[in-house]
Length: 299
Image 1 (spheres, rainbow, N blue to C red):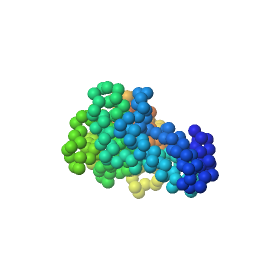
Image 2: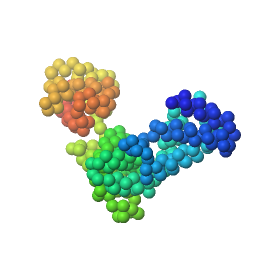
Image 3: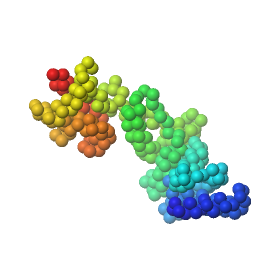
Image 4: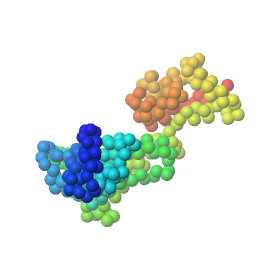
């Protein structure tokens, strides 16, 4: 596909701007770029219809305008053709997917019976459109560290979009602030962010524990080499206490293995995937152990 794009770009540049020949090639280029679009896909073997056809045609026109503007400045040596094409397609969808069109997509989903194939298709289109639009908010962002916020945000977005799919019939397009669809979505996202924060037992915890928790076990006035001794002590586990401290019914998920993973600069997401245990559970256990074994590292 990249070769096809490169060929069309080369052919288009051979024509002067605004000529019929260039317009013909650019139209082909637009169609080629939109082949890998995420929404306005052909539904169930049928041709596009209604709001989906309308959005697709608007994106076609918007993408054509962007390409006409950027074509002569494009340098394939600096930017791969696929990256260039994807960026312009993304910008075109963001421009077209305003709140009016998102609202129309929601109304279209409501038109079809629950659990029907067309309802499922419509909800899939709606969810992808919400993501593409760039209109999802970032509530309470300044209250938490970037590490903590990024962790809960993606999960909160997924939960919010699941709610949208399950409760789409509760959306009333004639109610609310200026009848905006994304006001309804972002109100729910705000609540889910707060609920996600409550999953952490300590409401004062603003970020996930890191190797800094282990570093703080060592007295500040002591030499920095003691940090390595902490790691060695945990690894040797002479008293067999670090390995014995583990998450309930999971002896493999013990303080020793988790602490050494953090010393190795593994992220909480990586450790979570390795053990199959949620990050909040791991982080709370880790913090409790740091407090429990603090005296062991001040000998």
